[in-house]
Length: 268
Image 1 (spheres, helix red, strand yellow):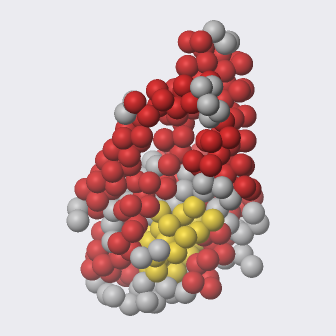
Image 2: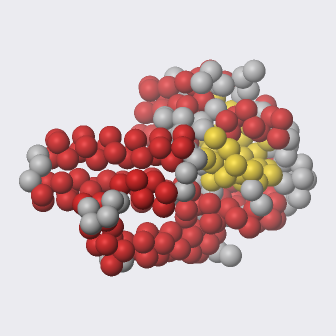
């Protein structure tokens, strides 16, 4: 089943969501309308995906949409846009990806608490099929309609709204931590004497293989470390240096900072 979608905001995240929805046959370009303030962005989306894109809200398309994706930044005037959606008398399921903005804030801005609203924190790995999006629904949201859409761009974890900011800083920003680890590891390989090409290839293979081991073995990471850390060996020497460094605390502090920033952006 495919549904008509109206996306308010046509940035990178909305584009990634729509691209995945097209790839997985959830939506067809002719069923999608996008509004973005940038004419350059509107032209790009039209030329690339053949959707209807424009710089102003199309009230008729809003009213007829079955899903409205609110994809603007928290710094933008999202409250005015939510009011416009409510004024359009749409019957659509409204899905917000505005970081830090709560279901209550959205309802207050709409002037009614009866709009079906789902608040999601989408993952940034939509093209891979990996990654979790965190989602929370208000009492009027229809999960039967919402879930196929959310599942078209990755896995979905339905969580209490109180966990949304945590999910943002930990889960959605998660690739940042992996990319930084990858860069540090490959730089270490080059520092040790490998070519950049060799270091990149070995690090990527180890990342994929280690993740697969965790997934398939069901073992605790400490158990897997014991396999590599023989007495007086190479692995335990490396482990000693990691234990003596601020590596773990650095990752943890980065997550906590990301969670705090998410809360600040929402103003709550």
